[in-house]
Amino acid sequence: MLLLIFGQIYNFSAHSRVAVNFNSAFQYVNLCACIIFYLASLHGHREYVLKILFRYATIYSLLYFFLAFFYVSGAVPRYLFGNMVLTDIERGERLFMYGGAATLAYFYWLFRAKTIGGVINSLMALILLASILMSLSRVFIVMVLLVTMLFLIFSRDLIIIRRICLLLLAAAILFNFYGFIDGSWNPYAVFRSDSSGRFRMMEYEVARDFIERNPIFGAGIPASAERAWILLGQDYFAASDLGVIGVMLDWGLAGMVLLIFASHIVSQPVGYARAAYRVPLLLSGCVLVASCVISPQVISSGGTVTFSIIFGFWLHEQANIKHIPVDLRRYRREKMKRLGRTAAGASSQGL
Image (cartoon, rainbow, N blue to C red):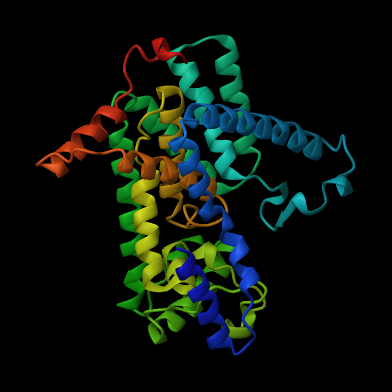
């Protein structure tokens, strides 16, 4: 992974003829956190790490809710929020939200509300959902609501949710790459009614033309969206706004393989963990996978921590398989089904 990141940084430098800026790698440093979570699991600290993680995610989401409320109501001077404020023509000003933490906290309390019940659990789930809605991030909100609905319907077999989200990703890949067959095709044309949609249409055409000339390695990883203009001729070019096409542009073909692998891992149920942690992690991973239709959250800043947690624990789980069954495929399929099912008595598992 590190070789791919540094290789693509060098690739951007070679294409744009500017000095290599290896500081660009720090925007993906969270991907390497899987090593930390692997070591924590290896030494028996998985439950403790998950408990602290969900506690901090809850505190963050509650803090965001109150800050967003104060910002919208004008109870606090707006200049105090500084760089937290995002500006959009259609949606106006809003506060930046780290979606990975918000989904972990929300699904944790939603799971508790569904399995245990109680006023506090239900109220917490509603407040954390409200904080997500206050982010005004349209695709993110739609995917959270979609996974919530699927969870309420298929709570007994979570693997169905995983499959639906992976199918959405597969459809997005086909939907985007059809533009290489038909040059008049632009998947973002359906969003032309707002400014961000029109900007994505333009970015898609620029990215497609560059990928057609460099299909293996793409453009490489720039230091920032502002620095991409050196190569792509745009004042601001955010490849992360283009979903799988943005991955191809920044990471090349190897990045597409990484995205598919990361989506496969992050939507798996985590073994050796209680349902109270396993289910929210799986649902959060499914949101990240579904969000890849327009933004590769799995390997970008919005979801790398969630991916690193699940990947680190997954690595430890694979290392613990000492006796490989004859039919390995059947073994893994049965294990995934077993972990994916939420038992009727989940509340008795120490939630």
